[in-house]
Amino acid sequence: MSRRIARVNELLKREIATELYRVMNESGFDMAAVTVTRVITSPDLRHARVMVSVRGDPDTGQRMLSLMGRHRKAIQHDINKRTSLKYTPHLDFQLDTSIEQGDHVLAIIAEMEQAEIDNEEEDAPAEEPYE
Image: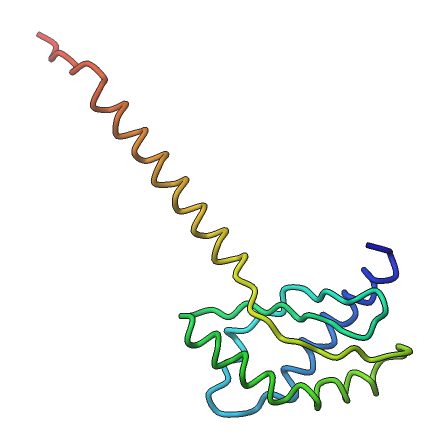
């Protein structure tokens, strides 16, 4: 990835997060549960996948994603006014489940470590009482 695309991705990430805070004032939208994790812009700057993480169950994530999609044009318009990009990319909001997957992997590792500790305790010889 070129430095230019990386800078555009970071700029869009900040601007989209700011615009979500400004635009998303619908009831049922929990701004505290939504995080823009990254933006992946196409090399021609015409399209951008906006990866968002939503805390909660999958239904909540889909509902928040739907609400963001409804406000996509307003968010794009505001970003166009606030930035000096030749093209404002078409935004496509998608759920980012990498954080949940990472948590799942960490939970499995913790279970394996605990099982190993439990096995070591069972295999250790019983201490004889002092006489």
